[in-house]
Length: 66
Image (cartoon, rainbow, N blue to C red):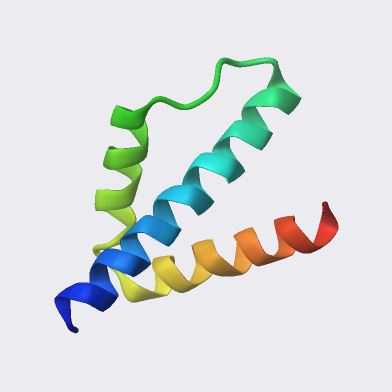
């Protein structure tokens, strides 16, 4: 995978992770997710390509339902 594509995908993943987690936190009354937590989640997701696709699928459903 090219470096430019990977960087673009990672930025999109960061946005998706942050918005999904912040939405869940608002529902539960918890504080928003921090940058460090986003980085940890991003590392875990990037291990498996299926998790990346699943995150984008959940994010796409979230955006369409908004």
